[in-house]
Amino acid sequence: MNERSPFENALTLHAAGRHDEAESAYRHILALDPQHLDAQHHLGILLHQMGRSQDGIALILRGLEAQPGHAARYNDMGNVLTQTGDLVHAALAFRMSLDCNDADANVWNNLGSVWHRQHNVAEAESAYRQALQIAPDFVPALSNLARLLAETGRDEESSLLSCKAFVQPPLTQKPPKQLGIAYYRLGRLAEAADCYRAWLRAEPGNPVAQHYLAACSREQIPARASDDFITTMFDNMAEAFDEKLVGSLAYRGPEIIAGLLEMHLEPHQELDVLDGGCGTGLCAAVLAPYARRITGVDLSAAMLAKAHERALYTELVEMELTSYLRKNPNTFDLIVLADILIYFGDLSEVLSAAKEALRANGWLAFTVECSTHVEEHAPYHLDASGRFRHDTAYVKKALESAGLTALELQEVVLRNEFCKPVQGMAVLSRC
Image 1: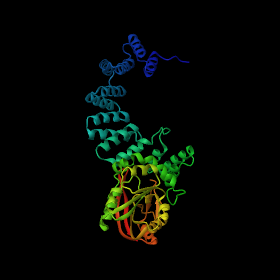
Image 2 (image 1 turned 180 degrees about the vertical axis):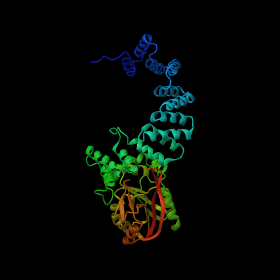
Image 3 (image 1 turned 90 degrees about the vertical axis):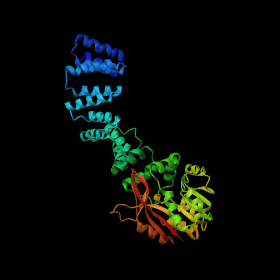
Image 4 (image 1 turned 30 degrees about the horizontal axis):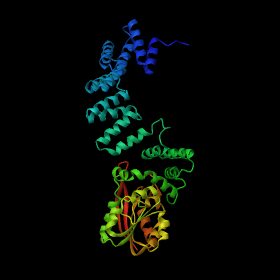
């Protein structure tokens, strides 16, 4: 077995964090051979790490003067200078490294990071993109460019790059649901489905994994999302639901419902109103001017607890929507289903039940997501997002079959997803 050289031993001590011993080892090498530039260079890095940056920088510079044209050493110098806050000279060091070797993605990323910190946005973006041209899956450059794009309002590309960075190995410690979403954002649905299959192997019967597997694989698609899926998903989301939906996703459901109602109803607080799939109660304030009573129904107990805090509901009921409607015929003057029918594929049963629950001349207002794929000829499909999208002609036919007359059918933007608008339809109908 070959013994390690003194320099290899010094590097091992350095890597192990045994700094005092490493310093002694490097200095011993230099005492025997003052021209050992590798030992001199790494001693300079070590001194910087030990808080003696000026001494370290002097050693690194001496080595570069003795042997110019060494790309890796210029890069190390740039990193040391960056860490000391000398960004101007750090950028110069990275440029000199690239003059020696302009095919190093890491150095381009380092240069971009320095320019980014100096608010030289165009130069930083160019450097990050150069790094990605060399190494398209280089995570630091993907992440840094995503951050720069987000800072400059280019959120859609930022989200794409963030997802691309997230799916790079290693994957073992990354949540399968988040991996599946990232693959979905990238249009890599087969890999998204594989994530959900792996999740199901680890947690057999998990309703969230089952639902998203169906959505991404296009296999065993349910007529509507299961009760277990809804309960699990929204119980887990309740605490941060409003902030995420309204803040991050620019959800417009209450605003859209308000617009529908204002066109045809007077705010006389005389209606018995059902907020179906009420969630945290985002629509309650919109409904209050029309209502003498507001009932909220939802499958998620955690969401209902949040709705209760608004103190606008007369009653809150934990029950599946269609079952609740069937149990309460001829009870409501107005039923609102904002962002709930996206979890129903077949609308016939729920619209029929809503018709039964309405009194004569009652109103039904709801939103759906619209099919956007030209090749889709089915009345509805389960999108890889996990939400159903409906064909406009099918919605009209389902209303007619339920005995409801459509008064308003408006194309709307319901929310953003990955910084892109989600197209939908707002409907106001009447018995």
